[in-house]
Image 1: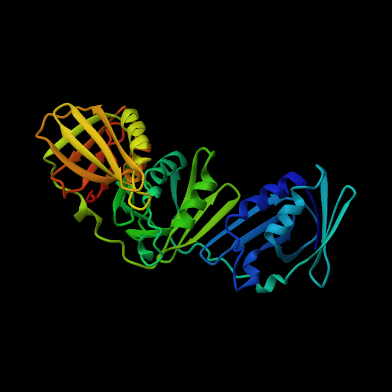
Image 2: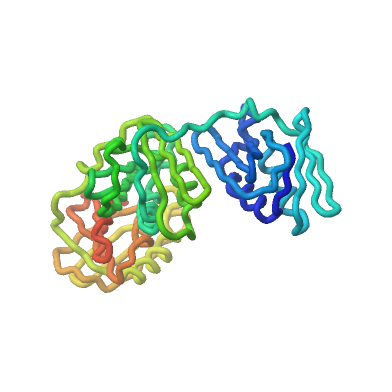
Length: 368
C-alpha cells in the first residue's frame, strides 16, 4: 500500500473516528482505524461494535492495500506534522512508514483481515431527513437519557414514526420524560415503527451533522440504523429492548397552570439549587396567587429562599422537584414565558412550549 495525501485532509478523517474507537478493550483491533487505499481515495473505518463510521477522502494512490493502526497514536502524530503532503507506505509486515517534510515515522500496524466488518444497508429505501430538524429533536430529548447501565433500554433515545405523518424522539431516565415531535413526509414504510438508538450513537449522530446544512439519508432495520451524510457513513447497533409505555405517564389533564418568565426562574433555580443537597438536588416550589417561592434546605450547608412573580391564580400549594431536572427542561425552551402544568403535590409537572408545539417534558415530583 502506498499513497500521498494532504496532511489537513488526513487530520480531519482521523479526528472523525476519535470518539468511536475503544481505548480500553480486550480486543486491541477496536483501538485501531482501518485504512484502505482504493483508486483515488483513502477510506477510513472505525468501530467499537456498537457504533461504526466510514469516510473517504481524495488521495494519490500508487498502490492499493489495507492496514489497521492505532487510531489515537496515528492522529497524535499526523496533527503535529508540518502543513505538507504526507507520503504513507505499508510493507508486507504491516509496518506503516510516514514521511512528511523532514519528519519520518515508522508505526506498527495490524492486519486488516482481523478488523470487524460493518453492517451494510439492507432492502428498502432510505429516508431523507432535514439536519436542522433532527438536531432540534436531539437537543430536546438527549439530556433525559438514563445513565443507569442496569436499565439498558433507557440508555438511549426511542425513535418512532407514524407513516407519512410525523416522527418522534422520546427519552427518559425514570424521573423525567422528554418528547420531541415533528411532522415528516419521508418514506419510512420499510422501517420498524420504533427503535432505540443508544446514547453513543445519538452523540455521534449529533457530532456528525452539527454545523451541516441540508439533509442526510437514514436507513433503519430491526438491528441497525445507517446514516449517510456527504462522504461519511455512520452505523449504529440499536438497543435490543422494549421502551416503556411512555404515553401512560403523560397526565390527561392538569388542575393548575403556572406561567413564569423563563430567564427569571432559571437564574433563581441556579442560585437556590446551589444550596440544595448534592445527592438529591431537591428544591421546594410554593405557589400562591401571582407568586412563586423557590427554597432549599441543606442541614450541612444552609438554606435559601427566593420569590418570583408568577402568572398563577389558583389555591396555594407546594411541591418538590430536582432542580437540575427543571433547569435541563427550561434550557431547551425558546419561549420567553415557561408554562408549568401541575396537579397535586404527587402528580408530575408538564412543561410545554408555545413556540414548539411538538415539545413535551414531564418531571416527576420528589418529597422535600
